[in-house]
Image 1 (cartoon, rainbow, N blue to C red):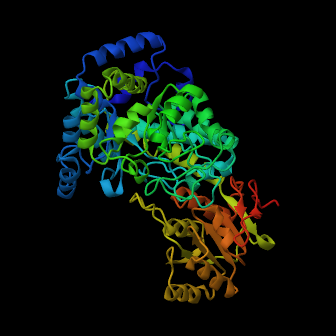
Image 2 (image 1 turned 180 degrees about the vertical axis):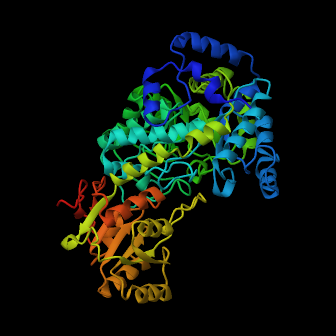
Image 3 (image 1 turned 90 degrees about the vertical axis):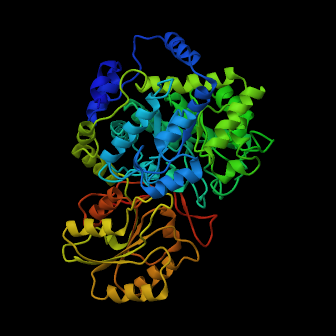
Length: 611
């Protein structure tokens, strides 16, 4: 097996990338060779394209999913799933059959992710299948590792706060460092495209799909953090992807299940939605992901943006000058399948200006539809080659066409979850934790306040099986010297569970209650109210939405962590104990629950122990 860190190191040409990598534990992925002019590179890549069959060119446009933890020997249930949905037994077979340009890893339902060494072996198996094809072009392996609420690879890899937490921290340096650390670890696993950062501006508190995945509600602040994370990822040799163009931040509908409509005027779009994407482009972002939603002010045809030539070719490429890869959001989502069938969607997307087709629900239908569209004359082979060239530029930039695509276990051990990375993540999380309420300076807890009851939600992101939850908060408090009892009450506690928590509060110095997405009818409200009524001081921790506090009253203190991952909850515990001073500031306003037109806490609100 080849060690990619050694086979590519001679290609490193960017002094900035080298210096930046050294600051966070080092990246082994190279930038483009500085001595080659873009015109010479393109001539080289066009020569490669000229040797490819139509089928191979079409395959380069697709990034497909698969089931199983191994490229060649998945579990039988994953074999059955692959046969049912992909028509092949293994990941290697789907790469071979459709001459794929890339694959995407998921944990949970897909079973692609178990631990770092398994991921490295999976990557090497995928690359062996790719190099066995006639074109001998390695796969661009991707993932949706935004961190925070959208985390695919858990511990022992370094966990970072999510986007809204960085919005609270307001540090472009921290955002850049986090992107570089995350990118360095992904590169060590052979994952060289990350569908992050989110560039949507979350101006709708009821947004069910973006929410804390956004850096906040201020377009310019979001733009600065997006640009910083783009720089961090790409300095680590990983393709970054700003998403979801033209902006998914002001919708109350989820494009996974519906076709949302953005009602912004063109002026509002320019002022609210566009700035982060302009910032990403100015920062040199390699790819931009489309959104499956309608924006009548940009395209009155009401086609989803993913299928709109007006939006993708006209606005994104023409007006905004983006020259990189345009990638679709997942093509299995209802938002893009509402108006057209699965055989038409990929063809229309290419006609609209898309280069990379992500996660088609039926790879056979999609791949054959594009091949047939070229043979019938609906698409030209020249148009396909334009997208292949853009994709090969990315592969060339991250070193896939200049040496071995394989990764080594030695590099995984050196990089993934490195002690310096973990320490940096903890310090960043501390700077994002936001103290919203602190009545009578109840926090930090005094020495005599050691007996705690920890109750609340145990959230799990539905598309993933990475578990970060209440036990992490309890464990962190235990490590700080508290005596804790834990009761997991869930997101919808029933009367018996609430009674049990209330009974357990007796004799405690304080109750720490974690909430997750508290709505007007949520029984989490009842839980908190009953606990407050006991007279035992209640410390509230919102482990996802900072908006939860608007639904609660009577708590002595309230913290927002913006996510439930270990790194966020450890930081919250250190704030509760007074080991660190909370420095986060709300990146979004919190409206009053009884009168949403009025603001309870404005953006920028955040207490410290010095206040």
